[in-house]
Image 1 (tube, rainbow, N blue to C red):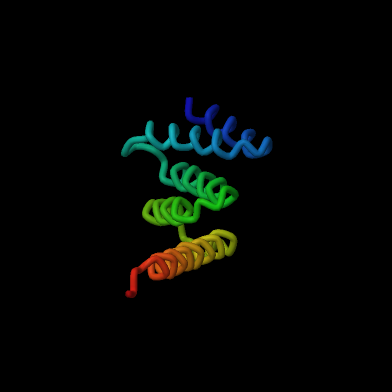
Image 2 (cartoon, rainbow, N blue to C red):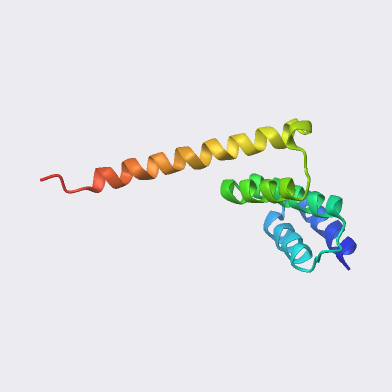
Length: 110
């Protein structure tokens, strides 16, 4: 039952078992269909995004927040997630710049 899995996933957070919680949320989301309450989907995406954030999996955070937005989540009314989205976007962009510099440093310029 999805409610029991949601509760278990939240308890995993308290135990700092983020990977286990993420796996449970992923299972919940994979079992949903067109009749699932949109607010429930938004809640699950937001919770999973939080756990990804704790693990510094920034692209996953961006993906889940965007999925929540597609379901109707109004991020402009949630400063925590607005910050999280922007922070992750900056981190992903910064990491790409660092990767590009590292690639450039490996170039054979002779």
